[in-house]
Length: 213
View 1 (tube, rainbow, N blue to C red):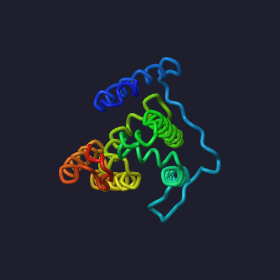
View 2 (view 1 turned 90 degrees about the horizontal axis):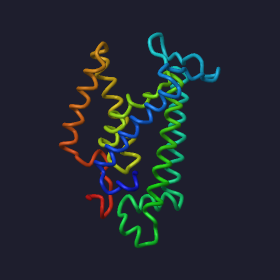
View 3 (view 1 turned 180 degrees about the vertical axis):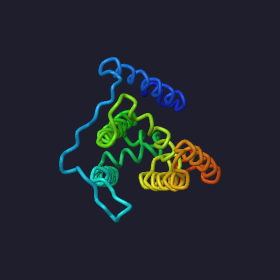
């Protein structure tokens, strides 16, 4: 379905959103609606006490390290392998890449698979401190979308910068208004809208002859 709608981004977004709702309902019918806890290893129990007030659980530290490992792996794939070279070529100018013998459909398929695999690992990591349900990822869709838009589509460092900005901003807003997380998300969305007005291509814009397309 994604291949059929590849050149129609809005319809692709709507189609994948509809598929996700269908998959969630199938999961509910098979496994039920009861939340399931994910048992973490015993060595992840406890927390690192920074001082009498602040502490960080070992699970969150492990997830942060895991994120750094996959960031390094992804940078290695994109910058040091033939697949990464082809991915960057198709991202910047698919027509030129096709004229050089690269199959854009194959690269898009492999990229989609790689991204889905990383998202699956992220879901397992989140399940270590949040109960697993069929709607586990729904609460992260808006933040993920805003992270990519703010950071700049097609740039890992931009996505990293966007994630840092959005995460820090959300925590700062929640610090001043801890009892209303919905208000924090609302203020954050307003900030993102204003930010996009001044930098529509994100913090780090994609470079290339077809980047403006």
